[in-house]
Image 1 (cartoon, one colour):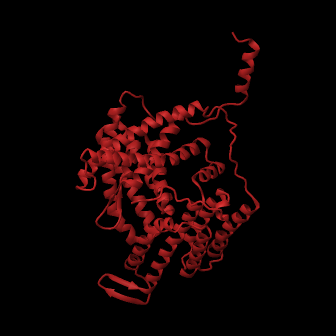
Image 2: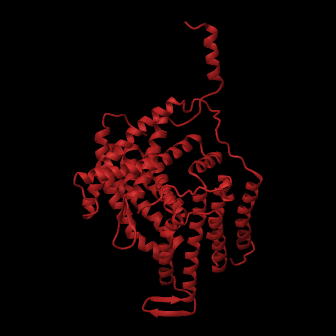
Image 3: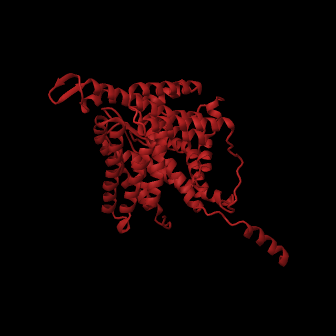
Amino acid sequence: MASVSMESKTTQTTVGVPPAKFVPPRTVALYAVLTALTTAVTMILVIPLPTRGYFNVGDAMVFFSAFTFGWRAGMICGGIGSALADLLLGFGFFAPITLVAKGSEGLVAGVLGRAYGGATWAKVLGIWAGGSCMVTTYFVGEWILFGFGNAALELPLNVGQVLLGGLIGLALSQAISRYRNPRPKAT
Amino acid sequence: MTAFIDLYTESGTFLHRMDPRVKIVAVATLSLLALIMSHLVYLLVLTAVMVVLILLGRASFQKTMLAFSYVFRVMALIVVLWPIFNPGGTPVLFELGPIRITEPGIMAGIATAVRIFCLAASWYLLMFTTSQRDLVCGLVKMGLRFDFGLSLAMALRFLPTFSAIVESIKDAQRARGMELDKGNLRKRARDYVAVLVPTIITALKMADMLSLALQSRAYGARSDRTYVRELKMLAGDYVALSIAVAVFAIPATAKYIFSIPL
């Protein structure tokens, strides 16, 4: 149909400039959405405690991203989403610590939680290991920044928050996997 | 906890007009400076500089107070707790069993609290003088790969959307009889699952549509991408950059190379 010269012209234009080496658009969209969800949940779903401070449910999103979409999603979306919440809530100086704490939490939970096809005990192990990473990072970071007293005070709060987040994240990943069952894998 | 989604305050000050890359570098150097200084007097000087900059940037008073509310609480806790856990030196002011309050302990506690204020202030300076779009632009120009920058910009764009979705689903579940503000932790956990599952499903559907939209706009079709908005460093930006670097480099050399107590 098209003459040979027209075909070679169009082929030439696209061959002249190679396509960009980007991650697939599905990943860009998914990670953007997971990150935004993590930040929104961290900022909105807060449970005030009778003592000082709040629990936030952001860890549930970190665990959910890690269990459902893999360790990369857990690390990137969980870490950046939580750090973004810190930036927007006024403690931006804490964002680098949060990035490492929640990033490592997502990474470890994603690696461990998806073993054995995502068995529940694997996910619980992932929550325990990932939670330990997060609590340790926060403890060390707060000790350096705020002193031992503050760090020790926040320690039980962080542990409680991870347990709550783990519980919710586990339930979320099981509920959503039922919804997503017909769909192909991710990461 | 009501928070502003965006700390950015629209204005035309020199801080707002500065290149975002310079501001990012300045935040890094100012944070490092606050971390290496331990003498209360110098920290108070830094604090004064920060407050002046915040005033020059014409920050909104309401947003500033909200942004610092957490920081003030942490500062108060530090001042109270630090002397208890860091007894050392003389003179001892008060002693009761294992607890020993010394004057250097109190001063160190106050210095730490002031340092936290400086850290918070420098990051707040960045956040309220830089729009989110400029922040992402700056990061991409500093080397962040475009697709990561796009993902970040999309996340920022969808943040208010998802906040609204979470709120409306909370309301919808409340209309179905869920009481989110009562109950022990186990009940609350179940309630949050009830709110989050519809939210996540909505979000995943949005992600599907987003990836289609990206593909329909020739995402990644060519590697020689041009930008509508170019960031250019002006003379003033270079001046600000050198000041930002010098403000950290000079005290750092003084402290670590010449061992001047700082």
